[in-house]
Length: 367
Image (tube, rainbow, N blue to C red; front, side, top):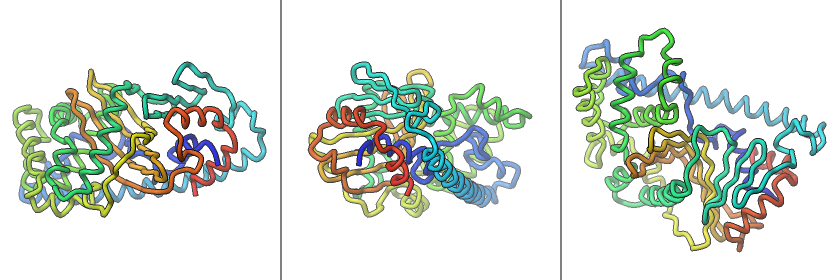
C-alpha cells in the first residue's frame, strides 16, 4: 500500500468524524453568546440553567449536523468511486488522480494540494487556507501537541488546564463579545461577521466559549450572561476573566466535566518519541490576526512501529505563546513502508507514489 499521507488527507476530507472541528460563520452559537445570549433576557437566577440548556442544544445541533455530513460523505464516496471507475486515471477533471505536480526544493504542489518538508515535519493542506504557518510555527505546534497530549495523561489536572492556555484568548473574547453585542441585532449579522472578523479566530473563540460554559462555574456563567448584553468593556472584561478563573482543578464543575470535554484522563499512555519520529500536520483552517495565529488541525506522528493520531485540535499562538486542546486520539500500527524511513525519505516516497492506487487508499481510509 502506498501514499498513506495523501490517503489520510482524503480521509480527512471525506469523513466528518475524522475531520477537524471547524465551524462556519453562520452557526447558531457565537462568541457574543459565550454565556448563552438566550439567557440574557431572563432573570439572573435562571441564567445558569438557560446557559446549560443552550450548550446542550448546541451539542445536539452539532451531532445532527455531523450525522448529515456523514450521510453526505458516504454518498460522495460512493459516487466518486463510480466516477473513478468510469474515468481514466489521467482525467484532468479528477484532481485526486491527476498526475501533475511541481517540485521546488522541499515544497511539492499540485492544483489542489501543497506538501512541505520542514525538518521532521511534513505539512499537507488543500491550498484553501487563509494563511500559511511559518516553519517555526509548525515546529512550535508539533512540540506543543505532544506536550498537550502527555499532560492529559498525567495526574496533575491543574497542569493540564494551564497547558491549554485558554487565558491567552481573553482579549480576543472581549473584542469579539463586545463587537457581537453591538451588532447581534443587525439584519445581516452573519455577513457582518464574515466581513469584519478573522473567521478562524472567531470560530476558535466561539469553541472556547462553549468549553468555558461546560467547565466554568454557574455563577461566572450568569455574570457573563448579563455582561454579554451590553457594550461596557470594563464589565465584559471582568466577567470574562471571572469565567476563565473559575476553570480550575479545585472547582467541582471543572472536575465533573473536564474528562468529557477534553483528552484529560482518557486512559491513554504518554507518548515517548524517538529522534526519528515524523510529524504530519494537516491544517484544515488557518488565519492570522496581526502576528497571532489561529488554526484547526490534525496531527499524525509516525515513529517506529507506531502511528499516533491526535485529532480535532484547536490551537492558537498569541503573543508568542501557544495554547490548544485536542478532541480525539487514536494509536495504531505504523505503515509498513515507512518503518525505518526518516522524514525526508517519507516525503520523497510520497511524491514518487502520490497518485498510485489512490482510489484503493481512499476506500480503505473511508472504511
